[in-house]
Image 1 (tube, rainbow, N blue to C red):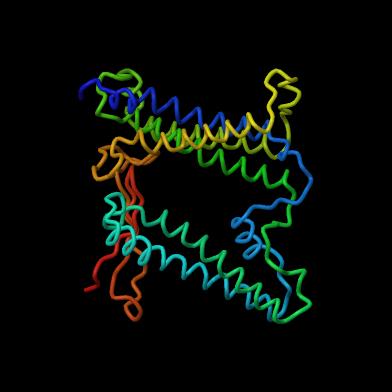
Image 2 (cartoon, rainbow, N blue to C red):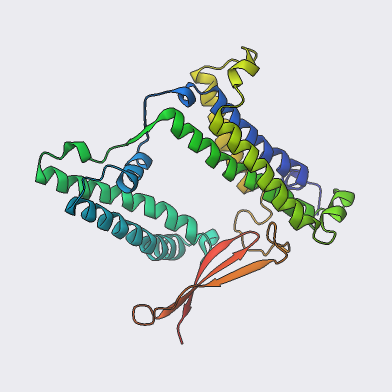
Length: 310
């Protein structure tokens, strides 16, 4: 591999720096944002509607049954539309995007499609409530019926699970890597020795996650007392910080060795597992579907594979 811009951009040190920096910046914005300590009701466009639609504001009786039925239909419709309409038809056949070839990228598409249809069906449910009259208390809005402080704690835990797991997976892949054979020879030899990689991966993940969740949920550490005005922030600086986080998240994707088409097969084992891939066969309902569905998980992809039934 020639030592050009891409060589340094996708170098293990660069990838590790970006991955762990994202984790740090996310916790920094959580600590600095005054919303984290707010007692006002949390609200978030679209996501708040979906949360309220599924989790709260149940009127009871037949209305609760209708609500559950609608969000179940929304989820099923979202999954099917995401897989067959958006992924296969729009991204695969119409736009011909290589990163969505065959079954790649199907889960991400299905997830966002489900969010979209939950939002749409929440308004259908609201329309039913308006027609019934005197049901304004149960109208689905972006308000989530929980305090901003509580929501931010949940978001911080989710951020940790998302960002640190990503960074730790990147670490595992870098220590198994082959494109940069001269990098970290001793560390890679130790990491791949016996079951060291598997034991350390899960031990570090569970230990740090337990500590972080405990710190976040109990307010054991007060950032204001630690900071003491050393690193003050305002709306503008936090907006720039959020922008940096978005850019670094995109960089993590762009630093993937298979970017932008994701057409190669990375020769590394799955994080924390002794195998390079897993296959889960879903129940085959021959009465309803001719195809057979399998979930294929590799170090770089999680895809839903559709096969013609026999």
